[in-house]
Image (cartoon, rainbow, N blue to C red; front, side, top):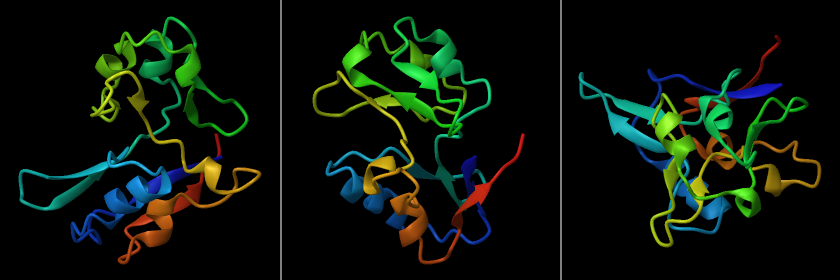
Amino acid sequence: MYRIRIDRSRCIGCLMCVTSCCISHDTHDARNRVVIDSETRPAPIFCRHCDLPECAITCMTGAMRKDEKTGYVTYDKEHCAHCFMCVMACPYGVLKPDEIYHYEVMKCDMCVHRSEDGSGNPMCVEKCPMHAITLVEVTK
């Protein structure tokens, strides 16, 4: 199982992770963001693909669910009821409705579409010039 790890001490707030997310998904709306913390340092915010994801627990249709094989929290827009309970339930404020149509939830999918078997690195990991964003293997 892999997770994105962020080393905030290396982040310079260049927004390359945000830009690369937009490019990877061919959209103007990123699934991550960079905010400025109370000490005026950049703080990248990403989906944590939680072990017990509140977004999936509150999803009444099963559109948001935890993939036991990969450990990723996945989103199926075809099954979504557009109630946005997942958005409200996320304790990290990562999920959001798309900015144009407001019917799809914008959520990190680890860029699994970039390779046939879904094993490629997320674009944000590849493009971070400071290597502040890395992909690490975690064990349960």
